[in-house]
Length: 79
Image (cartoon, rainbow, N blue to C red):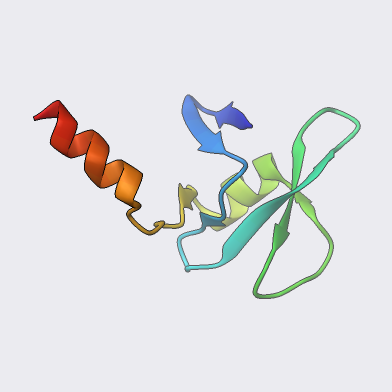
């Protein structure tokens, strides 16, 4: 599932990193207003709305994933 903040698309199915390297993951729940709730993985506590995490902790970016064989195949077939 994806959502966007200020035109930035955020993939909620992936761990997101803040500017300090904090890891955030969607709890699969929403606030009453419909904002996704995010949980910090390295310092568990109360979940925060995604908009608050984005505003307080800086822009988020997805945690890099491992390159899969399917990704290599896709690139090689496109060449």
